[in-house]
Length: 137
Ligand SMILES: [Zn+2]
Image (cartoon, rainbow, N blue to C red; front, side, top):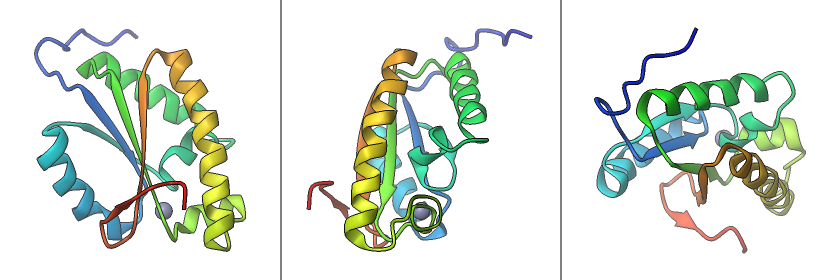
């Protein structure tokens, strides 16, 4: 069933896709308030990893499409983090180097998915303390 077009009524430019890890929530909420002001949020293990995991990817993409239809965003902010249990569990990220390599590989795959959806992706890496750091160490 098609969703009603509410983009004029409730609009945001941004969707934030973040990891479920509780340590990040307050930092990301603060960052949204200060930087983006408004954003829809999609929360799942490993942030952007939800778009790549078998059994999860299709549902995540459907969520993004539905939210976009409701609120009309154009930009998607993927906030990955260091010490991510999801990357350890699902992607063999047992060391900081392996975790970063897997995340960078996933960034490339997600860029393609976002291009197909006509959305503009942004990729950020956060420490659990809330500090943003570059992907390339
Ligand atoms: Zn995580």
